[in-house]
Image (cartoon, rainbow, N blue to C red; front, side, top):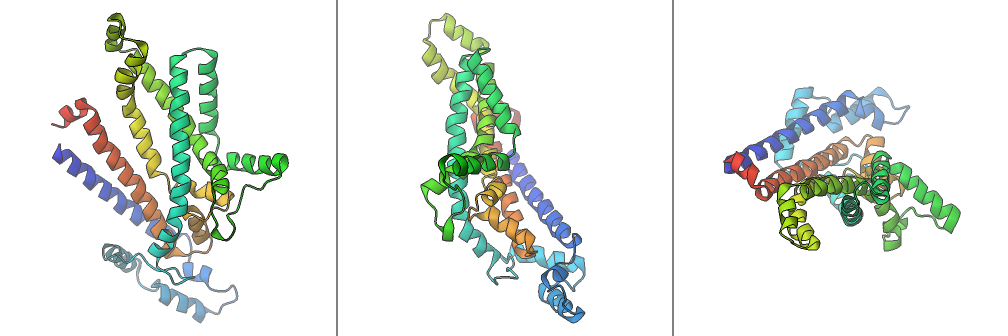
Length: 310
């Protein structure tokens, strides 16, 4: 078991290194950052000064080696526009993103699992078809579509603009519209996972044996079916936790939410390469860590996986 966990940790570290390498070379091959940062009519010597300042005058392998070495030393680079550390900029925006993502995840988990369970207990009924239709629609539609619907509904029907958190001010009224928008897609996925997993468990022979022995339906559901059906839902929960930062990029931009996603979009637009590299690394780390945690938790929840690992 320990060997399996160590293997998964090494695999996660390799994934991070691959992501760092791809982002590093992709940013530099997508255009000259020094040319993009310099004024449009800047003479060649000014562009060259930018290039030297950013370290872009060195050969590409040397730049890569310096970047990776800096990461191991805790040097994540500095914003060319503000002069602040990339880590500082990230930490300044992280609370707003966690607040938005956490609220969205709570909405998705509470409502998604509830309606998924209702659909499973009313299989092939009108309620089941209604829930599944909603789940497919919510999962298929992009977040920005729901965001635009929410903003237009607020403006045209209620005369309220669900948008910008002015001067960085965050309140519950400003939080709920983007959180509901972000949570809708995950809600559909949670509903489908819950329904499928619960139906599969309910149809197992041991559930039929419990019914034959006269165990009450509520006890069969909560004591025996729910724990067994929870394993795939834990996987879904872990993946959703990992995408808290990544999934909010579009929604934060639509609602002008002052989080990491908005910072990432602005950094890409202004070619702030150190900030872009660090934010992509942070998103990759959150996804990789969540997957690793789910793999380990899965092993503890499912005895079959423990036996296979042994």
